[in-house]
Image 1 (spheres, rainbow, N blue to C red):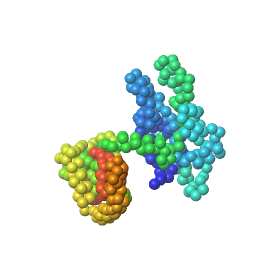
Image 2 (image 1 turned 45 degrees about the vertical axis):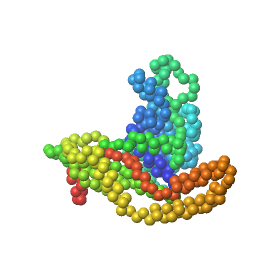
Image 3 (image 1 turned 180 degrees about the vertical axis):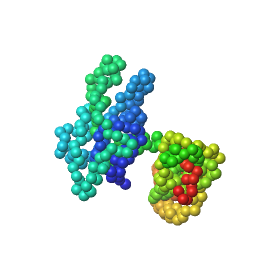
Image 4 (image 1 turned 90 degrees about the vertical axis):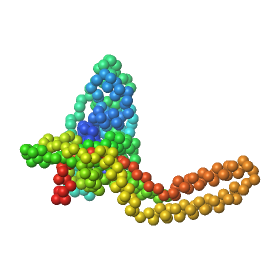
Length: 359
């Protein structure tokens, strides 16, 4: 499994937009960003600094990074138009901020395609580079660190490619902060100006990951939603949400209908729906896995049958331990089972007419 640099860039930019980071510079191959306090806490591993900020109430000074999605392309751009760029993955080596050169037209792309990619990402605006400011320790204690450091005006380059540590960290931060959601459907212009408020219906949605495992593995994602008004279940709930514009804030001129089900009751409805769906599947793969398991255990039993007749008690005990270990490993590898995990859940408040087929 792998990901293209374009897909990696899209996921990183999604995270930066969601955490309200400031984009300083952007091209198809890189992004230079000043982290927001929220993102800095999650990505920079500075608990002592943030503890100091929380205790003193000082204004936080977040770090800036150049995240490179296509190192070869970025290095080529830098060699053609810029004398200096941040060093590649050089921890603790501060560098002055450099503007990335203009991107040349890449062979095989349509005219204007790369220019469109270089436009500011939706939800974020390119900002001018802030001037270096005095460090927080110097302002509060009159102390200026004498060792190389990262801070305002000092930018560290990191290659963010599939499998890199930073990308895994961003994924982990996204999972941690995105486990629970609460979103509202954005009403149209007419609803905001009309006399009567719109009724919103609460929905509980859960994304389940179902893993079918033996010596082979297959995984599926099931996004299910249940109305907390009457218990209706909507399958492929994510496809329906993709057609809507959602906001984390309660819109004007709307009201929430009182729920008829609690969250616990809604969760049980979704679990029962998923259980019923799994019960109707074909489990021929499990029978085939058990046949392979029986064949493997037969080979193990045949191999150790004579060895377990060893007259020496100490040697026989060692062989017995090895035999039991081999059987446990084989059972773990071949025994068919199903794992179900709830990845993400959320409350979605949608217009009551949302379930109308005409919508």
